[in-house]
Image (cartoon, rainbow, N blue to C red; front, side, top):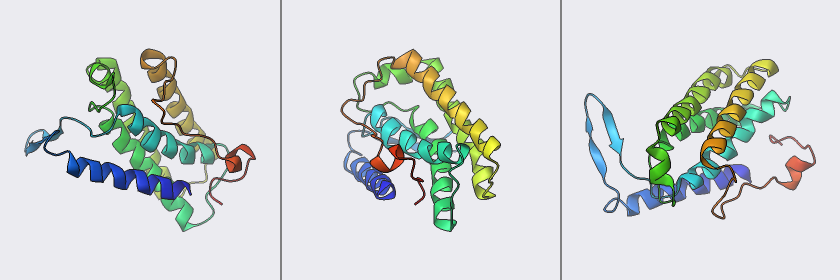
Length: 180
């Protein structure tokens, strides 16, 4: 179910991006600096909940001893690491939220976004190797928690969700593996 939700959210974001190209132009790629995305068609909060928060669950699960059982599970973990890498960079671009422009203009926001990308980059070799090193995964998860807490403390202390929520499923609350 979670995979379907992530796929639907991704498809919706891509669809919205193509519909809003006239409103949020993408600058042509510059050979020296790469492509420059100037605005997201969704709020930063939507990116945090739909991309980062949902994917974080897979990284935290392994650090808590909930190991992937097969290739499909490892694909989910690998995808989650790519989401962290991408999510950190997407978070640097303002979206449609009330505070998005203000937040993304802050140097501290940009640094924490880059740290999120680094966490994903550090997790990727573990995912590719299908590492069952619980301590290594826990270290990744701890860094991710610290990054999230620092960002929320600086920018969203009351953790508003704009109505976009990532709720624990009954399955997770009962301690049933995320990979089953």
